[in-house]
Length: 134
Image (cartoon, rainbow, N blue to C red; front, side):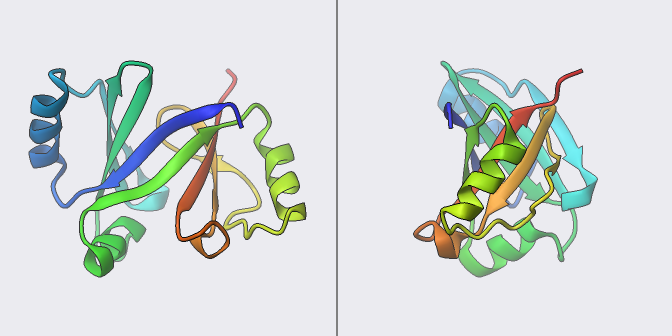
């Protein structure tokens, strides 16, 4: 793993949270994107060399909506940048981590993504991210 790619924060309202985080960071978000397969709208902020991703569920059955219903708004996941996501998935499985999706899928911000189950990472949802090479 190269670095923290971003921190994901589950929010009830992307519009209200975009306004809040714009005030907090002194800069507006740089991108809003829908990830239909995950039932989520995302908004990205750049803070120095770091990124914050706000996540709003698009329907009551989406993972983000269920997360908020169960735990409320707040930190949802930490994402790490990797060079070879498939190799990293295999390595982490061999180390005993529970991989939620063994085949990477397209995520927001031009990334391939895969997740590790929080049961195997001390309660923290971990996302692996690799830039999609065009």
